[in-house]
Image (cartoon, rainbow, N blue to C red; front, side, top):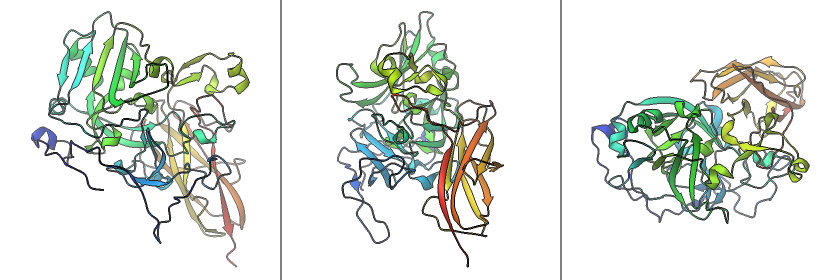
Length: 435
């Protein structure tokens, strides 16, 4: 796909974040579904409506592979708003490539054109010194870095039973990157927050019609002024040592380590300090979870209004782990050693303490070998060398424990949003005979 490029000013500040990227993408860049080839057959016919357990494709969601600007072929859930899932094999490493990173928008109008000569980050509201900062000015401020997982609140939603509405994600609505940018609190301290402040609101450039009757034409999220999440937040302009892809928030986006992706506002252009509680739909109404252990409830309790609901911003990413390889297509043989590998993560800020592997559906567990520690909010790779002694069907399982003492539960949960799932994951494999 051809991309129209704007000649960006390549001054010293821009060189600090690596190779330059086009600041202007045209609206004519229409995503195209991949065609079938002998080596890469893509289903263009009608897809099954059921994408959860028991479907042909279990780990990822069902959907065609599509090309979008700056992206490898990703799995399309919807195109308005754009929702693209990362295929399973990209999670073999702790860092997710930029061009394979998942995409989640809430509005049908996705920014495809950003002029850096005009664009400014606006700091406004209950501050003594309002500011309008260009990207170059942001690049000249002291930088900070963090490696952190960006996970959609609805990741794995297609596995909920009973089914719930929303994007029917498999497990690929997540990714981990090295984010570089400016500390949010540094900018707010420069602006001078007034004593009348109550919340900080973030707004990006994606617009359009949201749910009817809620005034949800723009995507905005807020945190209370005393929320600890603000202390760790970055306004990121770099992702894995490159400018952000347009579909991941160029020129800058919010990064809230340990929090779900709904707060990681893309193309953030307005940061407002409010003197009141935010009543915008996306903060006040959307993304609610039950105020119960593990956000677990029942359809009956919800129907009877027996459950208090709170913002998903009140919780951290739960501890999770996944088997990435082998998948259900891998051919295994008895007596041969196979590397079972995957990733684990937690939003507690304490990091992953251990990962355990089971080859007998969770009856017995053995410690896996952990990969490099890139930080408490990052993916932690793991591996286990497994030698099946006999042929047959095996059910592999993996569970993680973080340094805060949280361990994955071996049961599923249910809530009406399809959020916060972190049960122990399993993978069925078939082992053949060698003679």
